[in-house]
Image 1 (cartoon, each protein chain N blue to C red):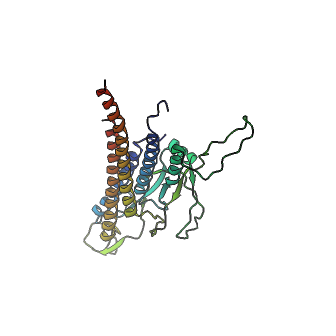
Image 2 (image 1 turned 180 degrees about the horizontal axis):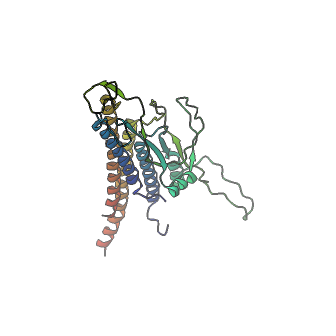
Image 3 (image 1 turned 90 degrees about the vertical axis):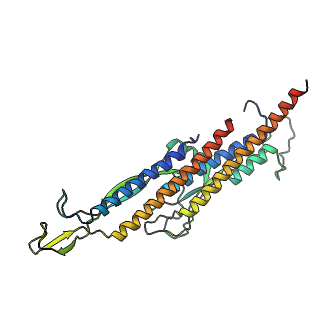
Length: 143
Length: 164
């Protein structure tokens, strides 16, 4: 990052990346709705976003700070970002006799939700930018 | 790094696979009464088999590197417990078009030019009800792929609107 005008920005960027990946996964589930033995896949990224948010806004974590008795001691970063998104098989629907268990209704609902959330994030990003725009415009009037 | 135009291609593969399937079903229905073919004998029913393929090596590798993989819980007891999601994002291609070599239907029509010595004609073993059911399924899957495509288009357009 060269210039950081907003912490929200990088959080939204991550969220958008995950949403785009999830769109791809749902698209491949639908494309394989008639492929024998195909199992629907999904990605769960909420915990990863939470960790990212905590790292960005430096939320009070329940972690104990490392006590240092010497100035040369290394201090660990507060959040070692071990939290990652999780890939998993989203299954448990009625399997057809070809071993495929993609449920078109579930897939299309998830896709709509994902799409709406993506658009909401885009709008949030625009709003975030608009704040800075208004500040800059206000500063032009004061001369 | 994920490519935003990925999902278009995934849905596009799905569309073309389902279209091949519709074509094959149409040819089954069209040839329901065909008693002569180049391979000899009546027309034989054909069926399309799909296969999932690894869509994008780089993207899938990045995904598996940067995420955890939960093990499959196997809710339906299919003996696939503990399988990992790999590769994560798959597209679909037509694997093969298989020929259904079930027995032909024999009809007694002694005046037919293709009748055998006993006066029986071999007609293709095609059940129009099965074909129509298949056709409806293929059409629905095609529509689902179109819906996925539309939603990806929506997302891409709203991302582009950030530039305005």
